Length: 77
Image (tube, rainbow, N blue to C red; front, side, top):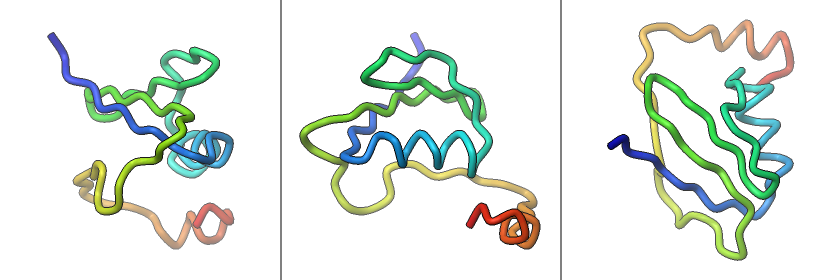
């Protein structure tokens, strides 16, 4: 059994743009009302919902290196 995180969001279009274009994650499954992504072996499902996730950190990544300057030059931040 694998663990999955489900994140309800109010602005589904914006979230898909963030995970796809900004972070560069590919879509594992598009269910119309939600999208499944995988990152670092963990799956998470983002869906449009009446309620959004509560404040605070919902998930985080540990990375060795990130090219923030490159992202800024590309307009991704």
